[in-house]
Length: 264
Image 1 (tube, rainbow, N blue to C red):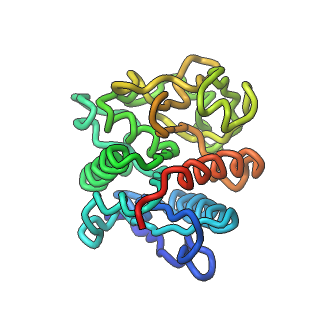
Image 2 (image 1 turned 45 degrees about the horizontal axis):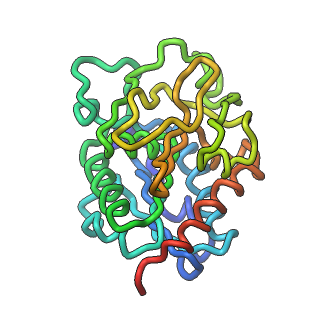
Image 3 (image 1 turned 90 degrees about the vertical axis):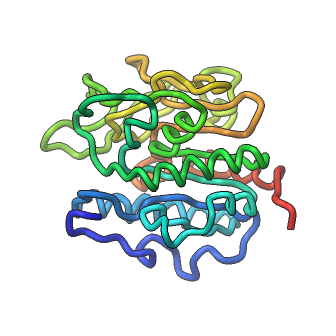
């Protein structure tokens, strides 16, 4: 499955794990994926631990679904037993799932079973009325679940990730679309975010609208105007980014989870 680097669950969770807390969130992330280097493994550890710790610090409980081990997971519809669904970043989505044929430059970490499991979970959560919040890969999975497409590789990547020999993640300015849910979450129209991606939403899926744009026009966030479904291309859970911005987004998601609780 991996290129020799393995991420373990105990490395990404705060002491005591995600038990207890309110609301309760299903957290989907692939802790390991094909050809993962030690550098990427360290990013998975840091980013996932920041996400789980933020949920705990905001009073929420969570169950971590490691989608790199689909055989050990319950039916994806089980996420409807939680108050919301959070999907973190990771490898690329299998291009066949959004209708792309041919080579994808810079492709990495494709795991078709993890993709299909996550898409099924998104559809189940949305149908049950649970809030869905996707980050980077999670945002792209939301778009594919709604029938949208993905830019396979952003050719002019300078705004979105570091170049050869440079850190993958960088600060990026994005413009939030006024009147969107993401605008209310972020609290400002121009936001400096942490980015490290070579793909992005191309055509938004059915019912989704653009909620943020990069300065080169690349779509940086999508949402459903009638359902609490939000995807952001950037990484609020990057510990090198703004803690205030991260807390605003996570707190807004958890507030929606409290408003759409699963039956107990």
